[in-house]
Image 1 (cartoon, one colour):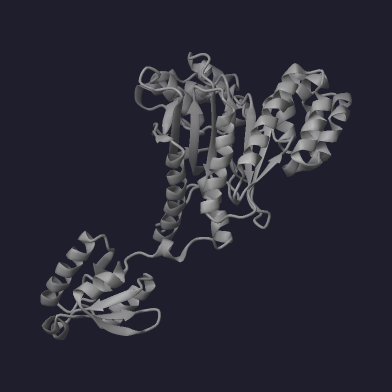
Image 2 (cartoon, rainbow, N blue to C red):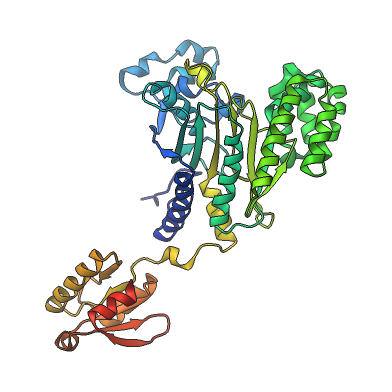
Length: 455
């Protein structure tokens, strides 16, 4: 029989890995709640019509579709297959799809439950998403997103607060050198307008967003392939080497976008966010205006965020988000503005691991393991264990009365710091023999002393 495996782009997580992921999730969750966000959950799959058309052409290609079953298979468009229209044929075989992100399902949630929600509504959501992407380091087909969004307010103070939220999480994780990149879709629209390429806005922004991946020449080649003229590309040449402080960059943009009302509005929005975020102060992260940042998602309308990992870690973004003024409009609820950010749990785990920033206590399982000397002693041990557990202390007993050497080795392999012996002699004396498996030190303790040591 062939050795079992898992689908490409997915992973199993051993106990130590789950412990590390839980540490990061709890850190993010604690900060979400500190900032007033409330938890929700949505189904792992949605109706296809909910997802398709919301992420642009590239995003649609990466959505995992769920095949119909039973009698619904009869709905397959065989004529499309005969005509070679595979996209139409595959759509006819599927009515549902795995969620691509948490933002669109959240928009659907808001519309569906609008009469039950108190606006502005601040929610956080920590759940897995799926993308039919090409797996590589830091990129998986199944991964978790940790999102925080607020809908029902157009106030730019929300963006300022989200910058602070990013900074708070990365400070708690002790990740120095994180950069929060910020831009504004209105600025990108204004640039497209100024260079006469407004009808190519999506193609322009998708290509520009790839500057750090394919370089200046690659971006220019993609723009030309999408029908953007060489004259227009010449006009945006300064964007490929846009340097200076945030204030200097905003002044350069203001000069470039003088004739664009939309572009100038974007400049003023960025000036408000960056000025106030810097005035309030950041503990760990750096805020950087990156005019090439576009994020290839159609629904962003204002500020755009992307978080870059510390430079010593060769990895892509570890977070992102932005303002979407009309996302709920696609589901029938108009004039509900929203803004949100996402933390890439899997990539953050890789960064914290590579920089050796996980506290040693994260992977500790039980604080102590009681040795098993036989049923009579085991009952005494279990009575003690029960009392310790009720006091909130993680302890366990080796289940079998095996050779002591085997029991000690098991505790060592599990990284359990202490073993506790309670044989006949110890029971008669009313004490516990404790061994520190790190130092080899042995001590005899009363129950009260044992509880204090393990607490």
